[in-house]
Length: 163
Image (tube, rainbow, N blue to C red):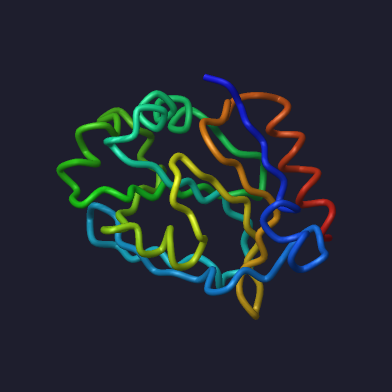
């Protein structure tokens, strides 16, 4: 599974002329399996937002590594299934997943499409929440080697650029 890194410059820099951009509407609330609502975009945290689907072969291959991956200190992660039901997402998501894993459902991919412009999965974003909405620091298109030291360094460098 190759790692493809697409810098945020392709997403924002050419349009907004910056290494980060205030992406329209990167604030959302989605529910996990227990019904708990997760709000992302307004809390001042750094997140890796990962969109995937059970019908996406590269996503299915990537899920076990995503579940094992522990992000750098100060970074949270959230997996967002764009499946139509929990039954579909649960077929793929490991029952042994760490209890601290955040998995939410975006039925119809509304958050993926309308807030991030995602239409190809897997897609992942490094975002930093702020008072005026989240800033996208980095975007990855396609499967990612989540446990790679290169990825860790890339996340840390992206965060350092906006401090």
